[in-house]
Length: 77
Image (cartoon, rainbow, N blue to C red; front, side):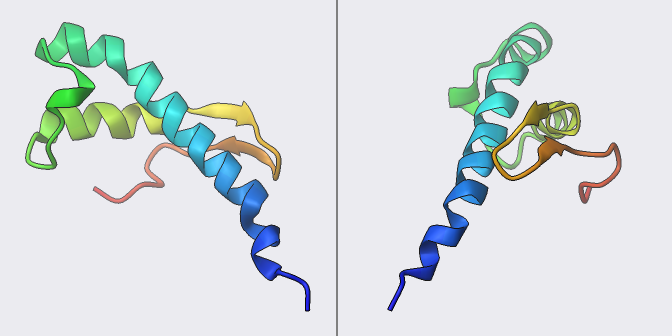
């Protein structure tokens, strides 16, 4: 019997790149706007959450599965 979890590996890879690019691309704005770092993140910090969402909406890269990008407004508030 073949291990079907192998089918998900490319999607997990793209998801991890999406997370990494979002965190990396948001660091400067978090530092300059909030004088904080990613280590200070809490879900109660709505300003940092909004910066992360805005950054995620602008992530655009060629993934393994598809060209990954997010449309503005496609994420829940």
